[in-house]
Length: 323
Image 1 (tube, rainbow, N blue to C red):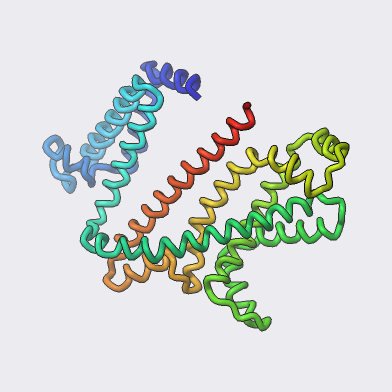
Image 2: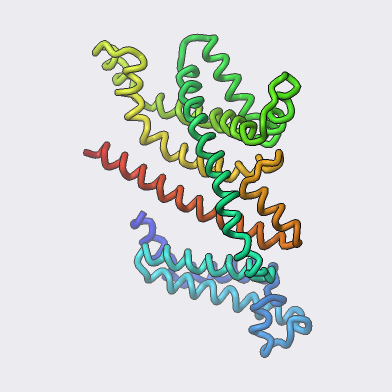
């Protein structure tokens, strides 16, 4: 990683490369037309008001944005790697916050509702996601073993399961379970229906993750375990799974983050989770953007926390395997 960064820094110190970046940034900025926004107002002493600027204002704004972008990139290239990452994050965060504030948000309204969204909506979202990922993990392990089995019956069920639940949109699965099961005589509430849909859908995706992780273990490990007299369950528990877990964790962590975001779909059947509250609280006073942006930031912060936890788990298994 650090070696690649050194290569990038050397490129950023070449005038021809910087000129190319400037040209690309200028073209993009020109067609995005920053002359009507904050940049246009900053440059209004040069080319007049945004309404009067025309092509000249558009050209000047694009030139200013491209120059600022190129100089910023050139300056960052002199920093150490970690500081480069920190500066880029802070700059992008500032741009995002600036974009959000262009909506003229009511901060007072957000302050009144945010704690209710966290205590009520976020708690339900985490509850649904945690139970769903647990059930999905069990289904994935069973499905992976079945797909690796020489038993045609087990393989047929597992392959049909993964094919159907990966091939049908999750929203449709939510409706099929919530609206379809009562017609079969099984009345199911919204929360269990949402959990069941998420579990079945992500269990199908994770089945392939588990299968690939288990298959990555060399044949010699299987033969050695059999030679020691291990049964299938003991072999999986003590030999195969401990070695495949480091390979399974990264994609499984990604699936959990994706499930956390896809849990918003259960709001369509009336589950009072984060997205449901963002819609209903915003509808009452027409503060739609306040609630949607607040919910988006909560999801984002939660995803960052999960990414940190995932990286720590990966580091733990990497250290344990390198000993």
